[in-house]
Length: 406
Image 1 (cartoon, rainbow, N blue to C red):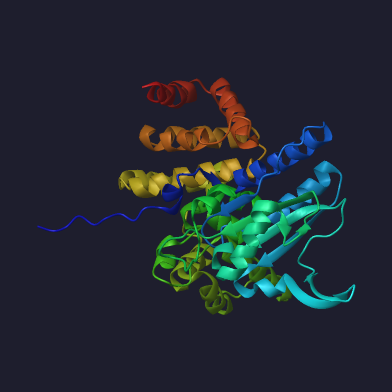
Image 2: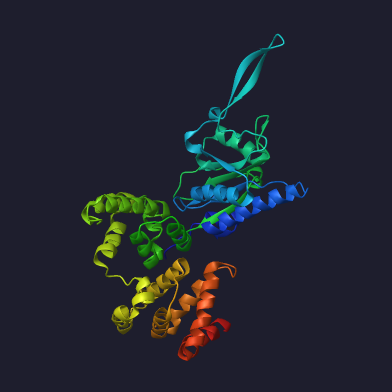
């Protein structure tokens, strides 16, 4: 008789907190800060909130803090500064030091504060503590005062400064020193971020990532984060490493006389960012173009239809499911403008796919908030498709609605 392995409890399960995408966390924090400022303006002196973002390394926790500061600057109409401190490389003395002075004939100690401490009574900003749980105990005690009282010793932060701490989950993949007594837990609003290919792709499209990276993750959204390699201590693909790879691709392409990428030279460099296995799959995609690109479903469906028909003939349900998921990811991130030919391609593709596989497409869209641009785009597209094709409505849309009702 063998013992049933005990499944490790996830950190967010231990804390019993919400799990949101990185984009949703950004919007949540930004909205709360904006609402706080508005309440103050209207004379309601509500307490400001200290936030703690928890999630896997490389998922974009640090990056969204800069995005929040930039967007608040634009939306509020006042400059939002940002001070980013790295807890693992700092000590308590990097923030505050006592020094002796003679005052009225008596020896006293006064405090010397560093430039990490926000200044300016009328200033606004974000004080971000990166990798808070990896700081030493003395530093954490000081930072707890920052998170609880928005002050260091007797120095009070300017009213318009908000505190965000960032942590990796306290589980087997990370070395943490998180003190979680009741007082520590009550200091923050804790939110856990999940990995989201959609959020990564929206950021990648907005920031002009190299097309090969965008197309690869649109085709294989499940590869945006390599959890298996991370768990064994290997180099692993994550949103931050894909961004670095994008920069390398752009540099190679721009510096080449014929604007080409030399894949042999790219191989060892990419392996150092996303590991050798992920690099092999990426290079096969980029060089050989064997995978079905979801973009081609939208623009060139007749050319790739034989490949899909072969998958159907082989009953390769795994590949068909991946293809449907990648097509959904492409549509909600790129939201391409459609003409008659594109609409026909979408109809022909959907009607070709098994109904249970096509259901993945609808369930994927149903995950998005009704007010989001992605959901509104896809809803409008479905309305147009049902109006243009009786077959689409009868053989695809109506059966999926029935499945959803059941």
